[in-house]
Every structure is written in C-alpha cells, then in structure tokens.
Length: 468
Length: 86
Image 1 (tube, helix red, strand yellow):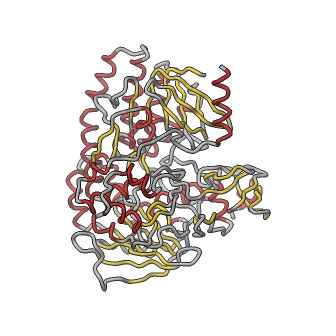
Image 2 (cartoon, rainbow over the protein chains, first blue to last red):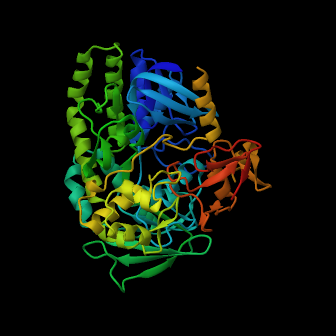
Image 3 (cartoon, one colour):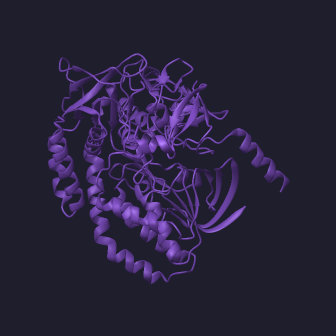
C-alpha cells in the first residue's frame, strides 16, 4: 500500500490544473491516467511527425502551459494506469505496467472527463463508422484521415472542428449533417456573450468549411450505413419536428467513413463505485455527481471537476481544476480556507458564464427523440454483447423499466465496456417506450473492476493481500 | 510517409506480417495506416474496428504480445510488438 496526500484521477486539462495548483502549494500529488501521456484527449500529443498543424486555441495554449509546468513539478505521474476500484475512504486500486497497487489518498480529485453519446442506426457497428472524437484523435495525433470520402453527422459544435481537421489531413468531407434545425445556433446565440474565444473559434471553423466547400446541412440525420466489411454508403434523410426521418426524403452517398457525435456525457463510474451521490441533470450532460461549493461531492475529501462534473469544456475544467487544487491544499493543511474562498469569489462570475454556456450546449444539441426509432429490430444496441433493439423493446414491453433489470433480462451492459456506450441509449429507449422521465430509467450499477484488468493480476493481488 | 517518420520508425508484427509504426503511435493508428480496417470479428461474426477511439467502448480489442482483449486505440506501439487480430 502507498499513501499520498492528493490523488488526481484523469490528466486532462481539469486534472492537470488541479494537480499543478496543489503541487505549487507543496501538496504531494499522484496524477493517474490510463493514456500513455498526460494531456487527456484535448491536449493529445502529436504522435506522427509531419502532421498538419491546426492553430492552437487560447484554451489549448493554456493547457500546453500546464503540461510544461507538470515537467519538473515533482508530481508522481502514473501513465497507462487504470483505477479499477475506489472506496468511500479514498482507497484506490490501481493497475499499471502489469502491477496491482493500493493507493490511499487524503484527498481524491476525480477528473475522469466525458465520453461521446451515440445513437444506434442500422450499420453503426460497421468498421469505418466511428465517433467524431475518434476521427479527431486520428487526425490530430497521427495525421491520419478516417477515410477518403467522409461524412460527419450528429449534433453540436464538435462536428465543425471534426470536419475541418479531416479536410486538413486530406479527406474529402462530403457534408456535415446536423440533426438540429439551423435555429439551434440562434438559441445558442445569447449565451455566447462573453465567450469570445469560442466565438472566434466558431468563425474560424465556419470560414474554413466555407473555403473547403463543405456543405453544412441542418434538420437531417444519417439513418443507415451500408457495406460489407466496412461502410460503403450512408443514407441521409430529412427529419420532422420530432426528429423522425421523413419518408421519401432519403438520399444515399458513397463514403468510406462516417464520423458521428451527439455531444458528451460524464464518466461517472468511479464516483459511483465510491458511493458519491449522483443526479440526472441534462444541463450538465446527464448523470453527474452531486457537487456543491468547491466541486465537493457527497463524500468527504472527494471532489469532481471538469467534464466529469458538468460537460462545459476545457477552459471551464481548467478553472475548476485550479479551485479544486487550492481546496485540496486547504484540506491537507497547506492553505488557509480564506485563500480558497477568495479564489471562489473571484471566479464566480466566470464559472456562471461557463455553466450557462455549457447548459445551453448540453440541452440544445441533443439527439431528438425521434432518432431512437432509427434502430430496426435487428439493429444492435449493446455493441459488446450484440443485443438487438428488438430484444430490448420486447423486454421493455414486458414491463422492465430500469437499466439494471434490463441488464439481467438481456445481457445489455454485461460486456467489457460495462454499458458505457449503450447505457444512455437504453435509458432513452425505456423512457420513450414506457412514457416515463428518463431519470427513472436509472443508471447501470457499477461493480469493480470499473475497467477490465487481467484476471491473473487480480488473483495475484488478492493472494498478496491474504498473505499480508 | 514523411522522411522523418521513416527514419525514426520501426515495425510491429500483425498476424505474422510486418507493419510500419512510429513512436507515439497507437496500435489502432498503425493498423489503419497500413490499410487494416477490420480489427476483429464478434462471436456472431460481425466485423469491428475503431469506434470511440478513446478507450471507452472496447470495440477495437486485439491480442497484444499474447495478452487478449487489449484496446488498440490507447495502447502505444513498441518495437517488437506482436499483434493478433481475432
């Protein structure tokens, strides 16, 4: 067993800000991430030389500066390490470099980020169909285009940089297909006030798309992907007000890749395992830990920050990370509480602006209800266990209205991803079919290991503990 | 491939065949870069590859150095690595 004053889980922008702030106040910090290098997805390092460089945004530059501070900060960085269990008393079980380790922390800051929300449609499991995030990382880190002829579809501002980045690495982007109507941008309009970096980015991407001649289509969705061993074509249809495809409006386009994105939802599994209280808040991106004051969860000494607490982006995450770092320094006795409250007061207005903007994005650019009718009865909804929509619909019709019961009846969520991908989809399907609020579908119960670890390593660690 | 990449690159073995890789690349990027677009087949026989690209969905699973079910999307390539597709 190892002890540390502060364990930060997740080395994205929020986690980096928290770790470096706490370390600057003399706190002993252990920073853990499952990726090979710190930075998260947002600050993913360039892997392949010769990649096409995109200009860095203000937030990216601040993130890069945090990475520079991290070097030589004395922070114990554990890369390629999975935290597979966490207890309420801040005991963490780690697996990295083939080894198990127990880490006990005085304070834990959860900065586990968010993942993309998917909508199932016929053909969505075909190779070449991937999330916009996957395509972005391939382009950013490796200079690789997801395909030669690519369609970008879904909902939200993330579609724009994805298309731009794809074009930059040589793909022909056939179109951006946005399910929301064009008026969605106007609804967002007023909340953009003060977010000048975002406005500048928006203008930059809009201009880049115009220059590259990439059409931006609203009120439409990809309704099917076809192909043998990979996607060969995609069907696009216009949507009615409820988001259902309008019959007769379909057109097919030949593509070898389709990048989809319907926004992000927080990765709450470790908070769940530890026993943090959760709440369903669409404005924050779905199920999130209940947080108050300085990112404090319902558990003493456990904070949740960044997209994991509320999907609001990197800049908001870095601001919260800094506050949480100060709070951690206070909790371990390195900083008077006044220093923390002063910082909270100073940043209150900025935080409110981020909350307002995040809430607008998380509620305006969401998959419309009607899109969940795209999955045919033989379309897979749980990718891991290959459970079809038809199977799920039969069980819901039989009166099962909670995710955990659905799991027992159909095996959904029992595969290696533990329902991370299908959970939000199934919650929607239950809510719509049973006519209940989505929060009542619940959230998949999480059992350790939160992410798969080799059985042999697990057995070895158990044996070691028995001996001790 | 840029000259610099060729210079610093190495090969990994995929189902017994050499595949070019560069330091910092993920296994998924090396596979896709070599034109390998199907990473595995499910028990029901459907082809799968990269989906979420960030370690969440477990769709891109391959066998790496004898260890089954490793995520190609977040595992970095290392010289001498052996990858098996299933």
